[in-house]
Amino acid sequence: MNTAKQSMSPEEIQEKYRVEREKRMRSEGTGQYRELTDAYAEFDKDSFVEPGFSRDPVVEENDVVIIGAGLGGMMTAVRLAQAGIRNVRIIDRAGDFGGTWYWNRYPGCMCDVESYVYIPFLEETGFMPKDKYSKATEIFDQCQQIGRKFDLYSMALFQTETHETHWDEEEKRWNVTTDRGDRLKARFIVVAGGILHKAKLPGVPGIEKFQGASFHAARWNYELTGGSPTELPDKLADKRVAIIGTGATAVQVVPALAKVTKQVYVCQRTPSAVGVRNNEPTDPDWWKSLKPGWQEKRMDNFTAMTSGLPLEEDMVGDAWTEVYRGDLAFGGKDKVKMSPEERQLVDIEIMERVRGRIDEIVADKETAEALKPWYDVWCKRPCFHDDYLPAFNEPNVKLLDTDGQGPDEITEKGVVVQGTEYPVDFIVFATGFETGNLYSRRMGFELYGKGGVSLTEDWDNGASAHTLHGLLSRGFPNAFLYNSAQAAFSTSIVHTLYEHASHVAALVKLVLDKGATEIEPTPEAEEKWWEWVMTGLEYGYDQMKECTPSWLNGEGQRDPEKMKMMIYLGPLVHYSDKLREWREQGMPGLEIK
Ligand code: NAP
Image (cartoon, rainbow, N blue to C red; front, side, top):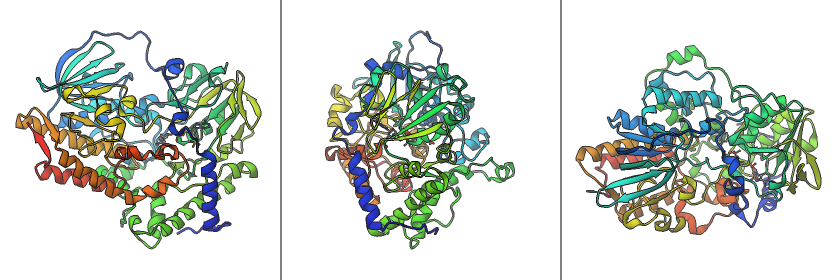
């Protein structure tokens, strides 16, 4: 284990964590952010489609309607097609497949989970990623490739927003309506609308006053900046740009902007922990040597490794898994079996290395100090980049540290930080996405189940969420609710969705083969499932509560009344095993009519 020199005692470090956390706590919690509606609706515009698209409404009956054409929806459609179910529609407000990779095309955008693990169906499509970590454009291309390979385009209704979904008790069908006048009747619906897709703006006073151009990083405006998703912006050489936020997105944007912009101001509230990237091209000989079935094995290995399970082999061997190897190196123990004190010492060691790296790279001592993250490693999503920290050595990049407060205000001319106004031409908001709010708000539509009761009402705004496997919910027959509550976690979210896709396709096939019309979990099965979800709390729930605020812990104010919206925090492999066993046992606790 790499032992970093500690200049502060563990107690002093923990006290520093507490002080830094306190600075950042805001009474408004998640309410501090602004939705991209009303006055801010322009921020949500899709600049990747030709304006004026129109088509005739579609009126038809389907076996399955999938809402969401991101990787979750696509993988489900593929698995259904492989099971022989092709009477499927996929709806998305975007103009193509890809979800995250459709919307996020900002300069420098890439995936920081290994491409061989992250991009699904590499064996089926024969696609070899160029590098260990893929650029966003390559992943988007691969999404299109999957769409063509599995003939998903014929199922797609793009630039289409779902209005409502109603369960018809007589017909045993879901009625799905859209903003294009479509009326679809479906035996099953799959809601695969994503987690981090509803961009949000910061609650900085005066945000509406700015007279220059501004946009959210997830809706990058290449018309204004020049360039394209594959070429760096070329209209910024004489421009001053402020970027608000220093999360995973900003860590990728800043180095790209630094190359082409006259002046970049990076407005920081909380620094990210930025580890080593070490990207490298795919070795074609290694690629050729891979044996059939390799990708699932690698996905399983990565997920088990990053769940803290003690394994002999680390196939991916990167900075993600190194964090866990750190855990394991501490007495070779399963993370969950460590005492909280042992875990804390390991954590401090990892974070001291992150902080030490900043001192090694960033020349200006004041900037280096300000860039140091003071919290446990899993409080915020760790980031990995080799050009982010060096960017602060460039003369055109200036860190505007706000000491945990955010900018004082935004004026007609620019941003004000610690009393000084910095005039700029552009403001880029890299301020993340809405999480933890109502499922219907995040999805953009409501589900009405039995008796016309809405999901929001039935779940009492989340306080009484009830599911089986985090997918089915009593009162909402034949509906699969991805990313809702009570499912499982993995460092590569695609892996969780991959498990969902296979499970849902297997289930739909079984039900259709039986000639059944309705499935619904029993209350007992849901209760039992919840009890199991709660067993995951020992994997660090208490630690998260003490964390610096972020989207991962409800901005530091996790609402005890929304406990039922939790997911299983233990290894995904436990969850996948549960689903498989349940299918093999003949699906106990499922009412099939
Ligand atoms: P994010 O992690 O939520 O970061 C938002 C940033 O905005 C934070 O630095 C936040 O500061 C800052 N912010 C919010 N309000 C502010 C204010 N009033 N003043 C100043 N700063 C403010 O969002 P993101 O960077 O878009 O990333 C979201 C998630 O997307 C990531 O966690 C990750 O899961 C995913 N992602 C993945 C990749 C990948 O490579 N796979 C790349 C990008 C994103 P605080 O920290 O103080 O709240």
